[in-house]
Amino acid sequence: MRRPVVTIVTLSAAALFLAVTFFEFEAQARVGGSRSMGSRGTRSYSQPASPSPQSSPSRPQQAAPAPAPAYQQPATSGGFFRSMAGGIAGGLLGGMLFRSLGMGGSGGWGGGGGGIGIFEIILLAGIAFLIYRFVKSRRDNASNNSLSQTPYQGGNVTPLFGGTQDSAPVKDDLETGLGHIRQFDPSFNEDRFNDQVMDNFFKIQGAWMNRDLTPAAALLTDEMRGILQQDLEKLLRDKQINRLENIAVRNVEIVEAWQESGQDFISALIYANLLDYTTDDTTGAVLSGSKTDPVKFEEYWTFTRPVGSNSWNLSAINQK
Image (cartoon, rainbow, N blue to C red; front, side, top):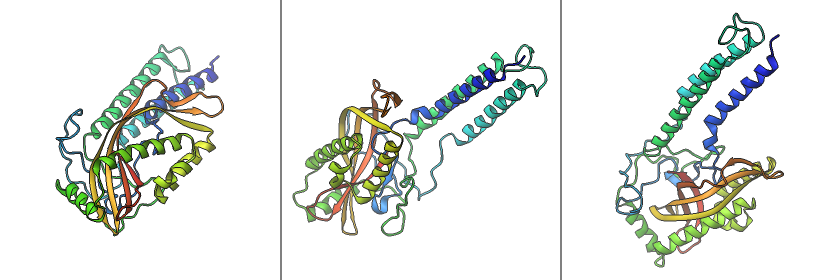
């Protein structure tokens, strides 16, 4: 007699393995959840400028990015191969399920009747591993190329002038922008600004982990506070808490500065590492991330303020 229940459980485990293979490395859940969000004014749809080669000597030098294209719908990494793999895996799973229920001919490997055979298990695991390697390789390579800038997921980001940024800022754009900012705020100092960015980074991450943005509300634009509040509400609904520990900021560097519509804008590249994991609020079980393996990341944080000696507010986070 065939054992369809055992076969179905085996198939479910294989499907779960595929799902974990594709999505486990997306588990980072720090502020912003490793995604781009918020508004950079008319530069919302262009990639932030790369740091100058002579700076950041501790990291490999990178070539300046090619001019960023006009906004386009972001492509999903590995979409074709993921769809193809889904079809193959679906066919295998469907075929094995039909055989397990007695709807096929001779059964699994060895011809001993219905059910899943060791050959199918090995083949399915092999396909999952190859897809994982391919998708991971694509994601690693993409970090060295220019990326299309995506707007906030779930909301709309409209450039202040209704247009798009078609090219990356020229080399002298940073100094020009900083010069304009100093004209209206002679006390502006880059080192003090970098220190402030670092302080704000810690304060915002702390408020995020405590699931209460009130202490950091004055550091965020209304748009950014609304975005992060939605993320926190989801964590609360799911009874989860994102834990951030051993946060270390290795470098903060201003990469862009400009003015538009009476506002100052500065984008800073933050290079940091931390322990980032999510736990169940009731049991304390780790649901994603790691309590022992630190995550290293680079993100662009953009701050804005009314022109002059005013307070800076976080308006956007963009992935490098």
